[in-house]
Image 1 (cartoon, rainbow, N blue to C red):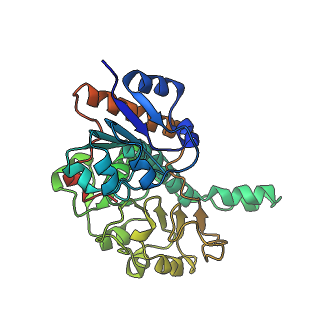
Image 2 (cartoon, one colour):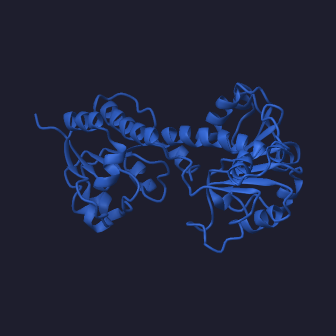
Image 3 (cartoon, rainbow, N blue to C red):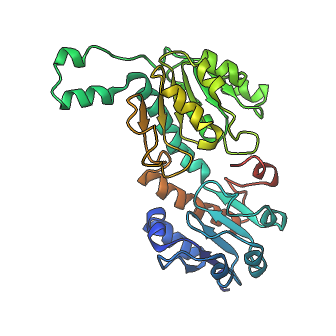
Length: 334
């Protein structure tokens, strides 16, 4: 009996960073594998010309949008395994409505972002790169030791949003033992109790928490929701971390408050990206910048690929998917 076909709709270079030799071998055992052997990105029209007869489609960063023409050409398509996170710009809800199963690797990426978030909290409170720069510059030892920052476990931490990443941050913070507040309109009292967090308004979050991390997706409801009003509520020496989506924050308002020097920020996402060369954020001593890489690590990428091969195998064996996207969850996604 011939194997079902899978089309790999990512570039050869990306494929090599996501799929280990073991994952490739497992994929070849399950499917007749096509695609993913060139570094030129496909257009949607080109993708439509390749997916006929395929049972599965393996997507990721750089995959073209799955248009109605692609769906029409993919008459035998039963599952899309997305080796990255967000799917809404790529996979239309029509695919789910058509009965195509969709799964994604957001949960794997979430682990890396959560770890980076905790790092950002520690960094924001202790600001050790300042002492590092002073030491390299030969500043006197006693001056380098003049300030030591604050303890993470001594703070009340606030999280905006309680999705994949935030829930992993909560788990990682359990060892510190500090109180955690969450603003998320979709978080039930029962779920908050299970996570041992307190549900609060966005205003209370900023006024009572010294360390705040944004994990909200970009939706019409969250677009620009964090404004000058909220930043002004953050106490002196407060730390704001954004490893999620820049559009949840009014960036101009944030920059204006950071310019006062009274709070700090650890920022991985910006609007627009890449961060413009003339951005006021560049050069601010109270701002730590990284180029949208909180979810990246070599380990994470290989786990993403392996997880999607696992999902494809579960699907072929008629087993429940571990990371499914449903019609209900699709509407709440970034």
